[in-house]
Length: 81
Image 1 (cartoon, one colour):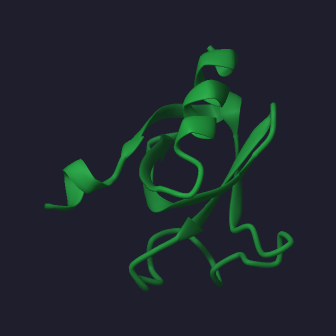
Image 2: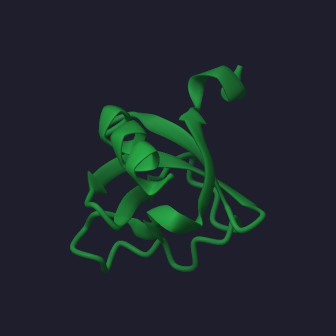
C-alpha cells in the first residue's frame, strides 16, 4: 500500500490535493515526498483546520504525514468546485 501511495504522492508533487488521514481531511499543496512521508503546505488561509500555527517549521515544506497513515489522496480541484 505505501509503495502505491508513494507513487501517487510523487505524481501530485506541486499540486493541491485533498488528503485523508486518521479521519481528518486536509487540503494543501504537496511540497515534498520521501519513502516514508509526504509534506502538505495548507492552502486557503483557513486557520482552524487542524494545522496548528501553519506548521512551516519543517524546513518550509509544510506539515508531514506518514504514508502509512494516509487513507486517501486525490487532486483537490474536483472537490473545490
